[in-house]
Length: 117
Image (cartoon, rainbow, N blue to C red; front, side, top):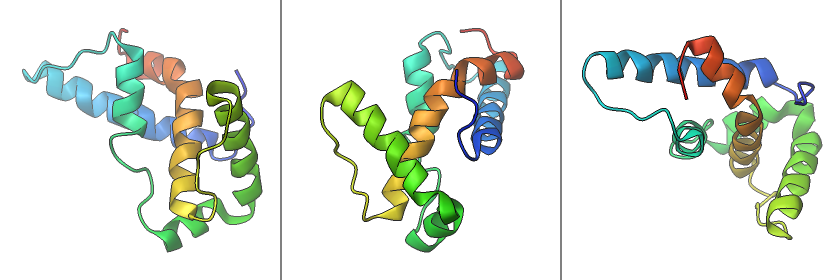
């Protein structure tokens, strides 16, 4: 697993926080199935945007904009055979980047949160 993604720790902390909150809700009676890791990943990183707003997305990316684009290009080429992300929109870049990195960190975030998959 690659851990040299920029903002890796921030993205992992986001996942751990989400998992802990959802686990606490489940303990209070709200059903949530942690066993399908693909659904968990989708719920954390795809159902809600990580960053909303062009200005905030630009700030979050900072000088790492092109690094994020490279990660996204590689991921989409490897998984879909072509690139779909709109790189002209910083919000799309941030949210696709966090989705990709989120997939890489999810297992360790679940362990840290004490969630059994």
